Length: 351
Picture (cartoon, rainbow, N blue to C red):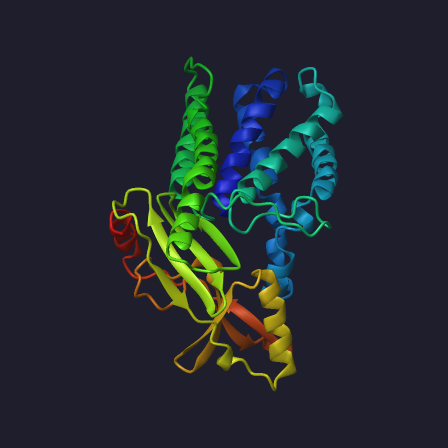
């Protein structure tokens, strides 16, 4: 998920775990702020591998993202290191009946919130890396409005609590309802996909006598109302949409050609780059040529709008030469259709 979600969930979890332990030693306001800071840092820390994009290239970043820095084994090391830093800033004596190992355990749990959120997306997470198996439920979009809005509300509640304390007002405990609702939402979307959405797509593929090798079912961007399926067939792919509000039972599938004819078979460097990209996106790819420039599309994210006549993908990558002669790379160009929100809401109720 996006940085804000990871930081806000981490900060809230930090307050939940550390605040009461620190209150006796440093006071309620400082305890709340320091706990939120610890949580925010730990919540974002696994995404430090984003630096690969600046240090190396986009393709290297794509190959390494959500692997070592998201690994269970590395998180043990991260937890011990951050615990040492915390102990230097705030001595263990300031924690109420808390040992160094307990502080490290709390850090490990906050790092786990990052993994848990990524686990719910279609990209998934390599939690036991170097074991090269991505764990994923594909039940929440990498950008989800419900989760984002609830976490904005949660941070505002914590900020209000701190402000009231600084004003000397008597206030009760922090209300954690928003983050509880986030957890409920994540469980609900997982069950919705598993029990209703996936069987619905499979039923339609069977009724239309479509032979397929593989399917990938996930929500469209920002919501869990309109779902999409990628279907791998002999000729390429099919994409279909289903809204939990639509009345029409039949799902229409549209064909997506791979456009292999655009591949430059006489360019070894080009072929090597394409091979690496295909591996990253689990072979969900296609080629497009727009204004004379060649793009390779990440088909997993679908088209830039849910219209059945759409032809451009939401996440195309321009194949281009890197600076300073470092060879070919891909450059992500996220392309949501103008007024995409209008088409999305309209599609909620239209088959």
